[in-house]
Length: 102
Image (cartoon, rainbow, N blue to C red):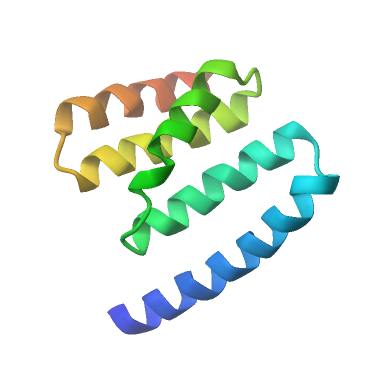
């Protein structure tokens, strides 16, 4: 079951990477930010997403798009949950919740 999930996640990651390549020249900043969140979430679940943490933090600080802020903060929360840093995970989860309430 876990192997099937990993295969599906890896396929999804390849598709998101293709979308990222397209968006890097044709997409709006908001589309690129949303794809960054998707790429980071998939990479985290596949075990190699910690490198996205600085980019997600930067997105959270600069973006005015509510959906992208929610996605970035939720993904940061997940990254810290994986690291077993419950204090930071809860911090970013609260930001995600607040972004959803707006």
